[in-house]
Image (cartoon, rainbow, N blue to C red; front, top):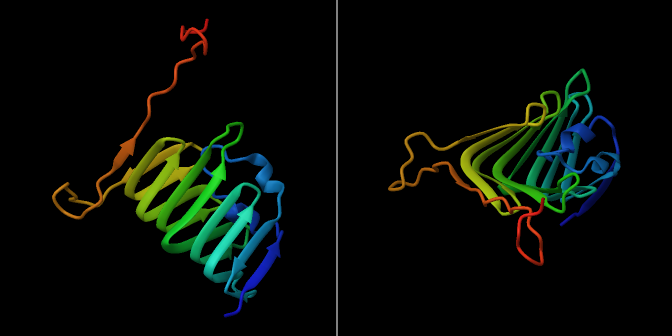
Length: 183
């Protein structure tokens, strides 16, 4: 089995690889992109790169894992990335917080032009103790708008995926010694 280790820093690919919704660590954008895969093919004419086989992409605090990642670039220089896996996943530190955001789905897409992340089939996003699941999750980083959709007609009695969310109560700002609210 061949093992390919590739270290990339092309500016055109960086927007595609920033899959960090909810204010991802900004310094990650300045870090080099490292990709490991079993195979890689590049079609320079079509502006498309395909990485296959246990693909691991890292850039700063961002880690993306998939069976296959395809990166395409349009004529304006914007990128579209598609990661496939069972599941494909990403993990990235949030800006200004000691917290990570994690996303999972059989397909994860990032549109650099629209700054939109989409997770398809068995989609799940986790931030700290909070978690949302559905058949489809979309996040627009410009408008900070989430949309979560379950399988049409899903019920608890069938195998469809209903939207499920776990939202932890926010911790009150209390004095650690007395437990009284801070003023």
